[in-house]
Structure formats: structure tokens, C-alpha cells
Length: 166
Image 1 (cartoon, one colour):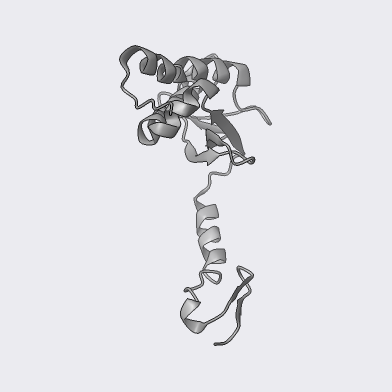
Image 2 (cartoon, one colour):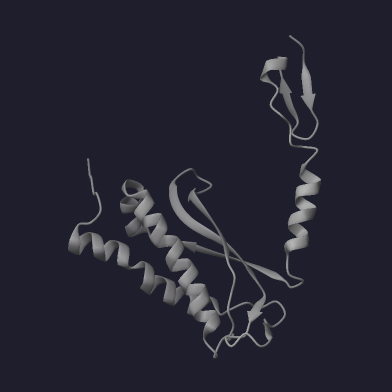
């Protein structure tokens, strides 16, 4: 056995057979390729959290509720962005699901990265955000709450979800 050290990941491995193929050398190239794909605009970070009453339902019905969470977050962003009062633009979204909070409690939320603008609704021009401002948080929150409210209501009304209380 020999001691190996992967500088890219700061891992110490005890045997040659335990050494995974290290991607540390490929990382800078991969990052450069991803950065080349970015639009030359500011990006914004928006987080949508599943309300507390729906978390237990989500814990027992992950696939269904997480799909609803993604859909509601994306629809909220694209609906408000398309509204001529707010932006009047189409919007791209990259979203990542986190299911646990920092305290290791079940806390489903979606982190969205969105460009600071998008093509106009007719596709003829670029509509940029004001510097440092994406969309009104209160408007996003209100629409998201109305859309995501389907989870506890559907559970209480139709019982489509598993709801074990034991």
C-alpha cells in the first residue's frame, strides 16, 4: 500500500486500487467551456421554498411534490418575466433542488439561476433588467404561494398522496 495525495481534491487515499480517476486536471477546461456558454449579462439567484404544511407530504411523495415544486418555480419566474408590467421578456432558468437545510432538517427548496434579461415576447429584441434588480420579490412570492398551495389542498381534498402519520 502506498499513500497518494490528490492535490485537486485534497484527498488522501491508502491504496492504488482505491484511487479514482481524478477529474481535477479536467476541471479548469470544463469551467472555461461552461463560462463560454454564459450570456454577457448579470445573473440572479432566486430561491423558492416548499411551505411547511407541504413538507411532510413531500417527504412521503418525493417525486410528485418535487416535480410540482420545480414546475411552480419555473412557471412563477416565466409568468412574471413575461408580464409587460415587469419585464415583457422570455426567460431561461437553471434550477437545482435541495432537499435538506443547513440544520439537516427536511427543507425542500429550489435554487434558480436566471439571466438578467431575455428576448422580448415577439423575439425581436433583448430586454435587459435594470442594474441590480431582477423582478419584484413580493410579486414572485405571492404568485408562487398561490401556485404551490395546490400540494396541501390536493392532499386534503383528493388524497392523491401517501400520508403516513406513524
